[in-house]
Image (cartoon, rainbow, N blue to C red):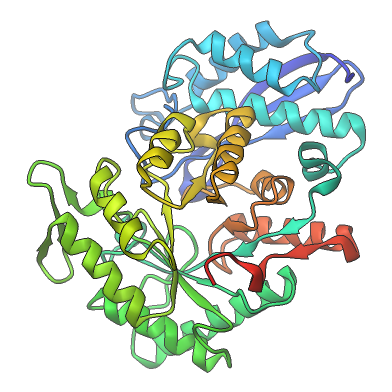
Length: 426
């Protein structure tokens, strides 16, 4: 049994891009405190749980006064509840909200309370967050899916694909994987400079050069891997986040590549990904099709799902109902886990559990709008997912998560495991 919750409060703080974040604080009667700052993304699915903002002129309509009021509403239900009863806390939040998409309280208010309570409980028990959530078996450090080149909604260039990532599967440890990724990142900067391109970075810290095509983007990444002294397809593989919903015309049911002014049907795009996966050392493709293109997803899995991790982000939105449909229809073999897509820690854990029980991988992920909150680093280890997306080797809001994983690896010592060469799609 843990101590009872004495107070729950919230305040606006600054997040990446000069936007606001909601910081929620939960304090127990013994004085143990936990804080959490839920974040938002630019590329968001219509199926995600709702974030509550104020509207109007203040902060461009993104003020969080309403969200703070909603935290206060939730607090009235939670004062006196045992802080260690996470399921009960989250159930109370869900019932207080009373909607399917968390639109009354807002996923930002609900998640802030949910995660802050977990942190307060961890403090109460004198445990790091990953051990409090995951227990004694929480010891797997994730492969960093490091975003090093940005396109789509995350950059102002002509690249259709939103993220080009690298996966250092050949490393022996997380710290070595982080070093390898960072070295490739710096070599990519040199490659881009040598070709006369900008080395400004996008929302998630990857470079955002004005390249002419998707092919040129992946070629410069492969060149950077080689110049860093590594072998593509052995030491380091490529991962993509296509964010296909962003270039899908729902009325015409056509995918449009702005870079080439090319229109593709669902089957055309499946063939495109098949060609790319045969030509390049691609290990993972996220949101390769639109969030409503269930037939296309099933075709993609049937075509390349035996050798490529096919990740549903907008498709699943960390929601067990949509995930259950995906499992039934064999629409993907992996799920991206974003705690703010669903709104509570309990529902997040349930999504990972369902994926694992159905032989799917789970990737703990950040959002394009972040703060220095490191909860997702602990969550990746707590749930032994073996994979994390938390941006590039730049921007302190991304680096904070990598640094937390380094601390966890050091704390675990010899018991720390790294998935690496045991990754199931190798």
